[in-house]
Length: 611
Image (cartoon, rainbow, N blue to C red; front, side):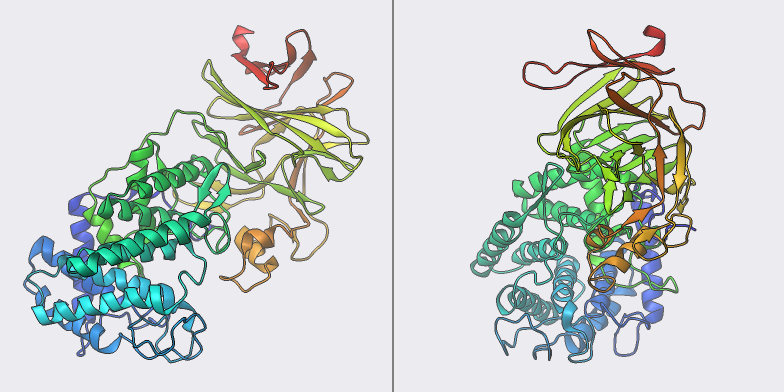
């Protein structure tokens, strides 16, 4: 079974001017065939997210006319713009909408659904989107519409801004992408207003960004991120926020948007595997955006010098929003407009700098969470998630049912490159059920094809094992599909276990259920509104790789050794000597030296033929 949303890398989509002209030509053809007598360009199946969709298609037609001067387009733009202004601008309060600060303001807004009181929860983002569609039309409408229609659109756009920032609470869904989008709308609107009206709008937009977005950033993995639906990052909406930051910087020149975009881009780069797979988020776990991410990933890939375009997008939305029949939908059209207008080219080579929360070389990558425990491992085309045992999640030694991966103190990291090898040593103090403080040293080494993981810890009681991950998905080239196995070897006995207890809180990778579906099933709120990250934390057990200790280790230690990416037999020897703890494999020798004067771990590395 293929994962539905993570398809091709977004940088594989052609983005030449000719390619974009072909996209616009297709939009024009569909729009002219679809336009109703009253000027509507909405898809016939559109119900939700409808308030901005016709205007979005209008903005694409205006851009197409600007590029081609197609004589069919001026009349279509005028008629469709008249439809929006006449039929889709609401000034009476939507019954049941709880987020108003001013009742009966008379200010215009866009509805998420058309029926009064039917589903007003999305009116705020729908109005942000309508504002963005409107300012894009204003940017490209010169010579297309008469002064009276243009003035009416500008008045409505200004009213949208005031409704968003005066009549309602700002960002009621706590969605960073929506909030930054609103700021972008204000900055773009200000360019069309007379100076006396423009400056207050621009100043208000910048103040909202500083006070309502930037001041509430959430920390994760060493970065400060715009909050998304109550969490730090969502792998669907995070790249959309990055696109908004790119547009904010493009149109305003304000350095704060570049700085925050750089930070978010580097964070995405660190958590994203080489193959572009990612999972996790407070709104969606595996759903990926498509064209909505291209602007930000492309713009900031060049700024931070890394191949962010490897991000696997939903390429069914590779150019624009579509309905089930493949027909164009105007929702999010503003992002396609900006994507076409921006001339930045993709950065297609990876960054060579070491990152605390990532190990990456060749086709191997490890993304680490805030605790410096792997959150995702990629090797041999297979993606491994943290496994679960006794409601504890991660990678690490298990003793008496207790997973030793949660730090009780400072986590230290040392990165080394040598002889074509890339390594990361993570040392952390942990406490078990017996309240004894132990020192866990985890060494990750890759030659770009396989990943060796060696974990050393003071000797444990009973029959400990290494929880070595949940094999979850694999890359078949064009798509990501589910799996329940991977090419793994261990220096000790290795077993792949599956939950023997049925139920939603026991995840069996052999079933057709995706991680996102399982996470939503455990979340407190309905799908689309619940927090799948929070739901997944309720998981009691999962499919898991379990590795027994390596037989050749010092008497006072347990050492676990696993190689991902190959099933060939694995032999590891571990010795303690004057230099420190020496780990030898057929591929390399690593010495985990004594801590330096500051308590930082030492690590030396060389290939086996230089040992």
